[in-house]
Image 1: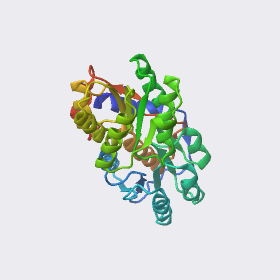
Image 2 (image 1 turned 120 degrees about the horizontal axis):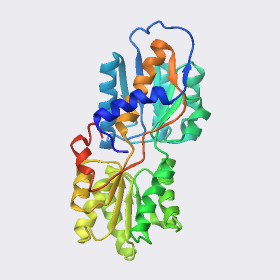
Image 3 (image 1 turned 180 degrees about the vertical axis):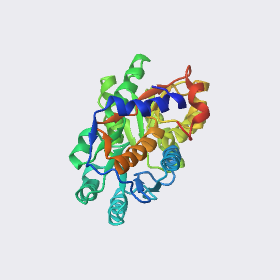
Length: 320
């Protein structure tokens, strides 16, 4: 699943061959000054989205289109829904949006589709939800499957009791990750998933408190850098770095270092660069030529471990 930049370029070309090309309309007239808007659920503090931002910048420059990034400052999903509504009212040539919560976002996304605005969903959500909303495609990773794959690795390592540090519990996709992990282990999720919040100090303290209250915990899974970094700090302060199985979703320079040092067993790679880059390319081709690849595109999951971390470390936060 780990790709070099040249391999990624081949993937982009292959996508058009692998998927059935649907003709959307018959016009081949170029749109004047195409403007696309990507709306994420992420708060400003979530650095993982920097790779997506970089991807839409690169794609926008290559395609000669304008791409805007919008998000709720604190990660509030009601605020995100309002941003989608405002974006629809501004009549962009296309919208790229995460399905952070289907029920909360259904109304404004359906309104965009009804208005004739092409919509691509990315990251959170599923192909089924994307289709129900009327979106053209979904680009991301199946979250439950990713969690299940992580849980299988934990089970093979002997994990029997774990902690899932959920820093965005209001997003159903986050619960799917924890549930998949739990199911692969064959144990109930229950109190093994905690609502950690997003403040680093609070996350660190909650992890420490949980491990002290549950000393037989022998595995941890975090859902991204926002929770992984404070968890690394918690384990270090407790003198347990490297003594407990630790896996995480997504990548950062700190996570990469944790993998190299043996503190973190793996990071699940959903290739955020592709989640930002591909929708811009697809919407541009739809706008200019009326062509679009049908179906969902899984950008992950892949697993970054000690023996392949050197392939992607230098690109962390930029292309990976």
